[in-house]
Structure formats: structure tokens, C-alpha cells
View 1 (cartoon, rainbow, N blue to C red):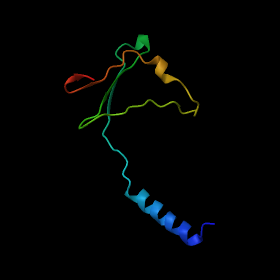
View 2 (view 1 turned 60 degrees about the horizontal axis):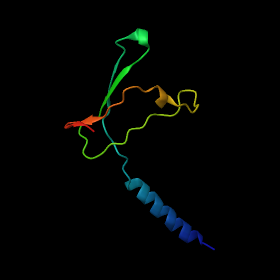
View 3 (view 1 turned 60 degrees about the vertical axis):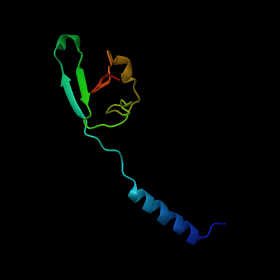
View 4 (view 1 turned 45 degrees about the horizontal axis):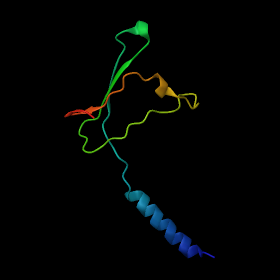
Length: 87
């Protein structure tokens, strides 16, 4: 059986490690255009400046109603590029 002292020590270590973890932070800039409203399409440009290495970008799967939705099926013409060209 695990003693209370051992559980306390494990709790202190976990709390200390959680305090030292730093989440990834990045500035994300969005430019949204509705140049042709009759088509009901938005042009969205996402810029993440100062990135070194790779970036993982993910769309949300829920809306304000907290229902799981498939928004990706509405995406048309997705492109990714960096300073040197297409990624």
C-alpha cells in the first residue's frame, strides 16, 4: 500500500513540474476577406511570423453549440507556404 507521505511527495513533484511547463506561444494574424459575397465564401489568410521549424495548425471541430462538426469539408484551395515558397 502506498503511504500518505509517498503520495504527498509525488504530488509535490507533479505540481513543481506543472509549474515549470511552458505552453507554446505564437502570434497568429488572420486576414479575412469577403470580396464576392454572392458566392458565400471567405478568403482567409493566416500568418504566423517568426516561426522556426514546423507548425501544426488545426481547425476546431465544434461551434458555439458544442456539436462536433466537419468544417474541413467546406475548405477549398488550401495552400501552405513559408518564406522560400510552397511548403
